[in-house]
Length: 246
Image 1 (spheres, helix red, strand yellow):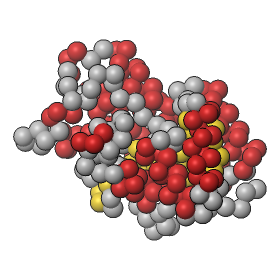
Image 2 (image 1 turned 180 degrees about the vertical axis):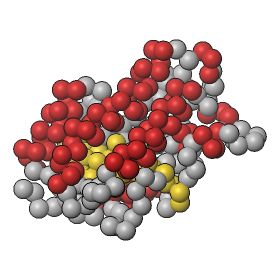
Image 3 (image 1 turned 90 degrees about the vertical axis):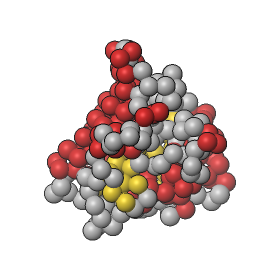
Image 4 (image 1 turned 180 degrees about the horizontal axis):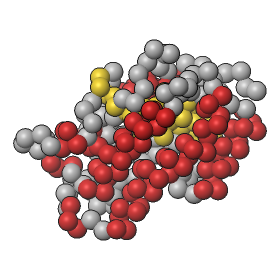
């Protein structure tokens, strides 16, 4: 069995996923960078290896059952353990997040967004949970968003108004529910489960240069939750060390 802690990060070939893998690798954790295209995952892992980090790249389209199973098999056969799961991969509607169109949301759009942002998260977590149960300090971090906060959406003046796209926001609300319920189910284990809001980050999916946070800043919450000590929280919704309202 691999002697170092092992982390699996989905959607890790760029942006927050890549930076999260880099920061965890700098903490001495072996990182497995997963991406839809094998070449992209291997290129990202090669960049980290060039920095002296222990990194592996694997192909993983989180919406494909066979690739989820293959990822779990890789972890079992090659490394023999998993300590941290970062469910980072996500999808946004093809139409921009800056155009609310609630009543026009189609079943097809719901299916597409929920496939990546919820259904695949549940399925991949289930696939690797036996390995996480064997860890002395298992950690599951689900990349959510303050757009998944019903409390924030309901505030007078509608501060999230420009971003209220139903399919995406609803998928993050549902993801947060998964976090809470799974945390309850695993309360008597060594596994902690939390949702992370990275903030508005300068990434391709996040809005580019108009966003407020750099990629390293946006990755900080995921990394902190991955490195939680035994007395750390579980079943929380966190941004930069602060709890957010559900």
